Length: 250
Image 1 (cartoon, rainbow, N blue to C red):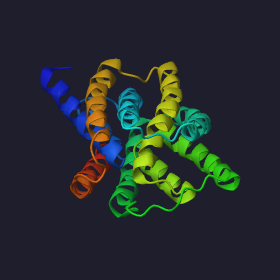
Image 2: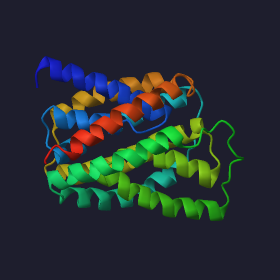
Image 3: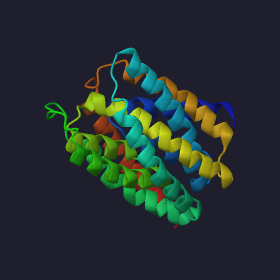
């Protein structure tokens, strides 16, 4: 990896880490960049998990420093999603690069749609943590884990939406819970990818530096700062990246 590539990856990671804490969908930026800097799509998908784990640890530390936490509920959701993530990562390991690119390109558009047109979280409902709500959340998060283990990109948005609709969490508390949930299931997915020999540690650790820094900065700022600008930026960039990925192997 040359110096310019390293700087590009770190800067992209910073943006992704910041976006993931503000809303979600940062992997929609990091995955294409890793692919376009030379990694095969499956290796990019696997190596990105290192950065996601770094980002989650940094973001969790930032939220904790402000006294914001959804623990221990987030721990239980993370454990449930872990089992789904193992299945998703195994599935991802057996797909060839061309098919993965097509799947990723198709998934990017609805996920960014959730980012732009999803709930604003300005007036969250009262938190709902009754037994029925918890059981429903456990079921939903098992399937979110499958998705997160498979591709990760956009999983944070699914987590935020689920916590808002099922449990009535605010955006800030949802993001706090998300950091622990993502960290737990990403570790499980990473172990699967390591076993399958899909991880490039140099790229993953380099990206992790940027993600961790962006997550720390974002977790220390108001979740409302720059949200509309970020959503607009993601809408344009993701549409272009999706089109490029779709035609990359055609």
